Length: 257
Image 1 (spheres, rainbow, N blue to C red):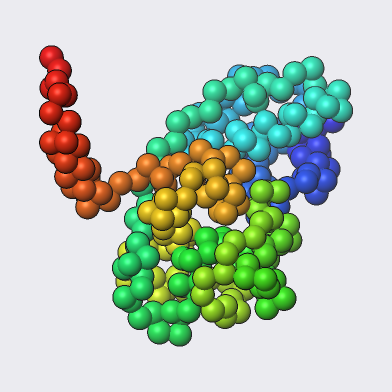
Image 2 (image 1 turned 90 degrees about the vertical axis):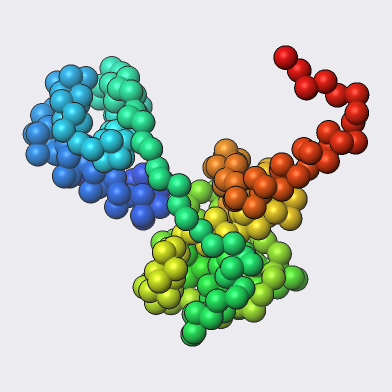
């Protein structure tokens, strides 16, 4: 079976979100299909894939390689190929610039006009925008916000199905995030940064990282830990004060070599 034919057959069958499916389609159609779409799966070599990926930027290469790994995993399962050659290709390192976010203390002082309640709701509950857009009054009960779906259908991962403590008034969200994005832009942050605000608030409140991961709908606590390890300047200063205080209380401590 040709690579292009198999991809067309496979993509609608994959148990992934609509957003991920769209991402995979774009990556394959733009970056692989022009060169390899008419070749049979069994005739495509690892070198063919390496050369197709070589001209791409690291982020695009990473995304395309992830899609290829899924395609070849499914092809291997159907015995259309003898091995998953995409899995043998090393993924590029993608360096993501640390995203700026506002702390809750900062957000609390800003008037975002008509979007104020929605922005604060996102910052206090850690929802992805797709989850917020699918939320209704019926999802809020018993002192919790119950997240069971996204505007795309299912949540991003099974871990996305969760409940979080209700901390502010709910106001229905539009299907798209444009209005909120515009309100945040002047402060040089975006809608997704509000999830970082939530994570940072959990950290500041002393919530353990594994609990925070559950509240944020992360399947891997390491994702949450990336935010937990972000340190503000005032925390660095506070650490110095704490260390100095500790040393003063412990006169027997040796400064070491």
